[in-house]
Length: 80
Ligand SMILES: N[C@@H](CCC(=O)N[C@@H](CS)C(=O)NCC(=O)O)C(=O)O
Image: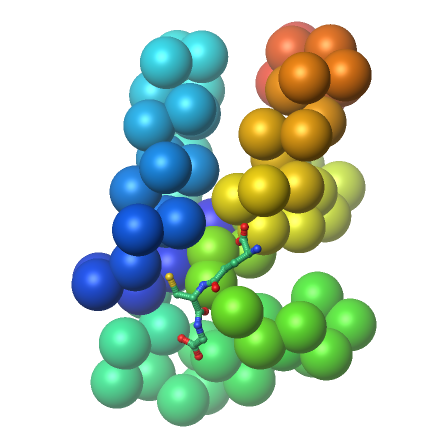
């Protein structure tokens, strides 16, 4: 997950992943233009944080991940 310190959406995203017991790696884009550029390129031009990948699947942002969970897709994705 690409994230930023002062970002309520990042906190919400992390809370859901923690609730699911998922192990995740955070890459901060704060004061790291290279990480933000990398995130934007991988996310097809999206510049907001968080941007979340599960394995090679780009989930999107926080709202996207909650929507995926509501459809039952997040558990499936996390189960690999
Ligand atoms: N709908 C998006 C909203 C994300 C969002 O607005 N994030 C803010 C930070 S909390 C952001 O990236 N703002 C623009 C920026 O920081 O450059 C999501 O659920 O991830």
